[in-house]
Length: 276
Image (cartoon, rainbow, N blue to C red; front, side, top):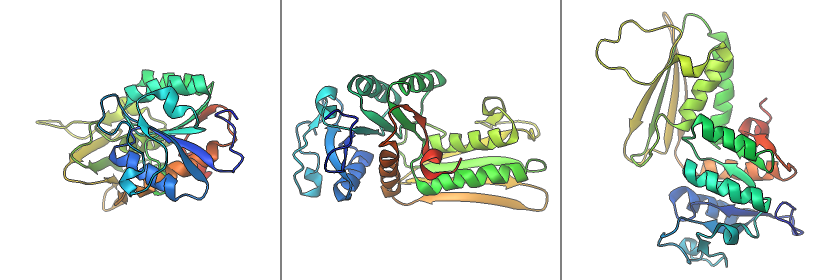
């Protein structure tokens, strides 16, 4: 059986990168509790104190899958790798996945344009699903934002406010940027040209074509996003709030199932949810 083939048991063999982290553990628990997925590999960085430990030990159960930093070992039995790590780590995983024929579900954020190009080139060899947020609710929210932006294309100022926990290292969040991209595309604008990420001092009047971003970091906030359409005499706010990473894990498993019959290509959660 090759890595890309569906197991005879009908269960998808899934490996998890960043296995000892908060998101990694949530993914492993979701896979463990799933009826159609099985944990096939668990990866972590060299030097991690979790190396060698059974990946489901934190659940008080044994999976027979040790956490390893050896990519070939961790991906040897996998059909799909779920990766919520850092851009550099994800790109290293991509190279191993291309070699071994393992598909990729990527929730990592903070990619540069050049790194996104590398991912797209990798998708010519193996199926890659890239989404800054795997939550079903967030992706439905993105569709609502597209509709709202088209209807409120004139006379409304657009601001995006996001809040996350103190440990998040990139800003604005990948989800906030995706919201900006969806809105800008709906308005026929280029986000790179109309985004405003900082305001300080005497800024002058607001450019009506701009899309503003504000970032909050603190505590254990899982993820809050609000898009404000501020007009004359009224304001429309579209908000999504995450209270648990479980929604990201369940969305990731939906992505795994979607990729089952996809040999190569670049996809996102709109493809998974039929929101095109």
